[in-house]
Image 1 (cartoon, rainbow, N blue to C red):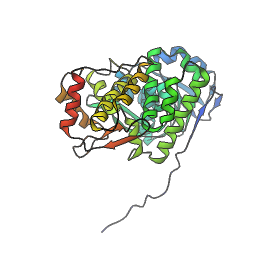
Image 2: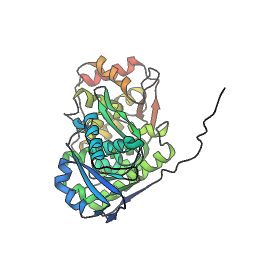
Image 3: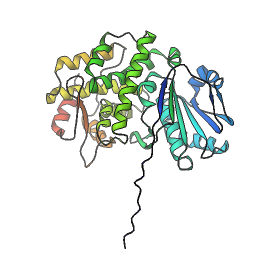
Image 4: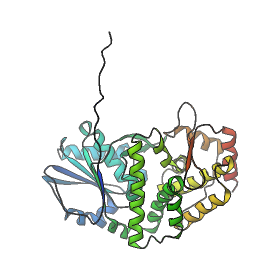
Length: 349
């Protein structure tokens, strides 16, 4: 006997990304703001002046990628239960990519899923992490290996929060901007080569461009079964670097910057990119003092870590590589010999 379970109904997960000064928001349900110690000290007072709710609770977690784990998720969930949040309640992610990823993940599993919204405070989160619904945490095996696709109900981007952002954090966000330009938009890349992001108008224009690109890609491929995987350019290498350094030596965007340089080296080896183009990308990354080199200690170990990448399947490593500037190729057909040849070249630098 076969009994079908028909689940063909469409669920509309659409939402708006608003780039403007933070407005006043009123909620008729319970709300919990998840933030970290750094953002709480700098900006929580400002946010609390803008929000009213049936009950408003604060959950403060430690600041840093090393806390993006199950222990912190358990703490967030415990607080949610203590505050007696229900299925109508809303979580607000107020911070950078780490806060957003963990808040979204907690929202996705609390009572089988509640709504959350994003108020990103870092450049990296404003241009990339807050849009698209990827949530998750790290474990000893790798980056974001536990998580869920859980779209926010809304995203509010206020660039005034970036005024307190350290230069290093700003640079980490710039790496994600470069990522999108190299893989999808040559004209945008050329714009960035001359752009001064210290100018507020240019910064807002840049953020809006990135959000538009990300929105178009996610609309076509929400669950990353095709084109959305291209947004992982630099990440396959970068995640290995983060794992090898226990998420403590490099910011995520810094590891991605190095990862892009490594991916470009492989692209050059395969004829997808010229050395001149690769150098242009490297120089653009250096414009915001991003690291571009990493000493690979053990090539075999580094290579084996690739298989823990979420894109890899059937014992094949899926690489996202630039195809010149403004386009990309996604392939699982690169031989171990060629990859290790490039890794050795990088390790000898």
